[in-house]
Length: 472
Ligand code: HEM
Image (cartoon, rainbow, N blue to C red; front, side):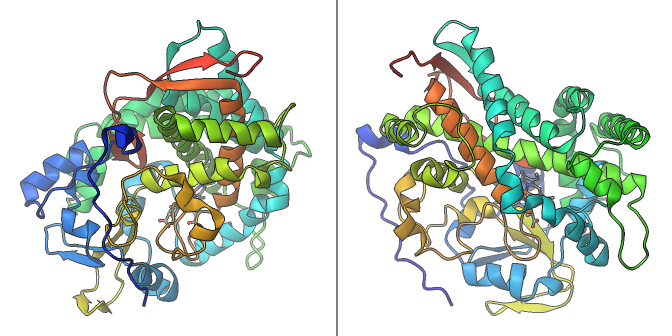
């Protein structure tokens, strides 16, 4: 059993360090009743997680909806690793995202999942990923080029810019021909989709019938159909003029099930292409967005990061060989993913009656693993809401439980793109910070809101100034 650290120190915030306490979700002091829960859930599902979850190892809320929040690293390990077969993925995920991702690797279970996992795993080996560094740097450079055309200090929507830049990366690596039409369709559908997903998730959590009308449903379906059709067209085009590239699509097209000798049906190809494109760029885009924001508030850390980048990469592009040497850059990224984990909650359900920390959990109960809360748990972290990348200095990082910092999840369903994401975020952040300075606009603080990924509620406007030759 993990020994909890002593209670965090709630030191009074000195005026000079206020900038190190970025915006956070304010939890309700007590569990909410159903109507309150429903309203808050639509605004931001993180607002429904009560204060007690930030203090306790496990909190069983009777509901409705009944949910067991698990935050103690030892209990997290039981759910995600030791007894993962007793806590499979919750059908909620499939109900909410199944229209888009079908039965792809993220939304499938059992043998179906295993087969798909085996097929794509080779593409994510370290040696493979490092090859992609130039494409990752090119993504960052595309944003820098756009900023360079504007006057110094102009305000830019950094969240939108990072989405564009990371889509540039993932589509160039994974698709033949870059996937511009798919990207355009995704961009046009995003607002409708994000709106609809709040309702569909609320309905799924409350187990309301699928047929019950809900706002935004028709628009969601429209974009799902549209996007799947564009991807299917691209697959057809690739079938008729295949090349010898080693991209994801080529790999998936050639995959054969060892048991049945069947290749992947077209529907499943579409499922997976969409899964990788979306999971592989929204998450990294939000990591970079929150990190640039945090650095804009912490000039002392910006200076340290810049100094390291200049030492490790004095000239020329960041390459695969630089990544491991960019130690401070990675510390900052990890601290950013601790405070703003791109996927803030994972869900499982109890397949049979179970016992966790003396709490009886009935079969069928929803089990929540709130990464956002675990990363700010009052009994696991010292001064949990403070931005302090020195927490991830190698010697300190080694003292944490594996299940107390887990932006990529854990166990067999751990993010297949974790190494890819860290390398991409490091290469892109180093390229961006070396080229430009970011300042927060005084207008309003960006509140984190959970819409599958953790978004800044009203976007992330930052002022961008391209550095001069001296690098100021
Ligand atoms: C900062 C970036 C990222 C974060 C924080 C992140 C986070 C996660 C988490 C927490 C899970 C586990 C979900 C669960 O167990 O319920 C997951 C799964 C997954 N991620 Fe990521 N991810 C990131 C980037 C990527 C990238 C770059 C790709 C692909 C290129 C990717 C593809 C996937 C896939 C396919 C799964 C499902 C794996 C499975 O079920 O076997 N992710 N991710």
